[in-house]
Image (cartoon, rainbow, N blue to C red; front, side):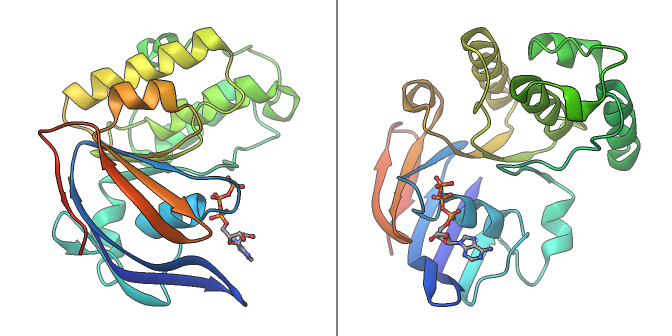
Length: 219
Ligand SMILES: Nc1ncnc2c1ncn2[C@@H]1O[C@H](COP(=O)(O)OP(=O)(O)OP(=O)(O)O)[C@@H](O)[C@H]1O
């Protein structure tokens, strides 16, 4: 994956959530880190084409994603920090519904690999935070997307589920799935990521390579 940010700014009223960010990375897996309100979720939303920049361009694999959002949306799956689930349906019904929307069946193997055992009768609104997270992850991974944009994917997961998830991502990386992940789980991310992008109050403060095979140009 090649991801280019060219002088990208995104404002909310007076707040510059992303402030003149510029980088050019070629990598399979990019970690986005920073403290609260650093701009991580906003950066991911720009890549997922949920938001448009006020200034600048975002180019993903040669495509200007503001001009051609529909092309990127076909290949990309986005897990928001607060995923929208159908609360009044069961987990299985959610999986069936999102499978239809994404035109991709879910497999028992996927559920097992994320340690998710959906309870037949419970409605999603009554599930624990961790179970809701596992369900959201299963939905995000439906249909074998080529690019994953994941916002705090392991938040609320227990240790076993976290390990299972990182190991699943590692397998996907071997299958050439590209990933951009905002996380506080840096120990695990260091094993997976080729680059770490560090944000602070909307500014790019550091971009660090963790893998000599990956490359970047900070313009
Ligand atoms: N929809 C919005 N309306 C107004 N301000 C927003 C909106 N989204 C983000 N912001 C502001 O933009 C800044 C960056 O927010 P963002 O959610 O991108 O940060 P973050 O690094 O993901 O934070 P956290 O780790 O706390 O989730 C914050 O000051 C936030 O209040």
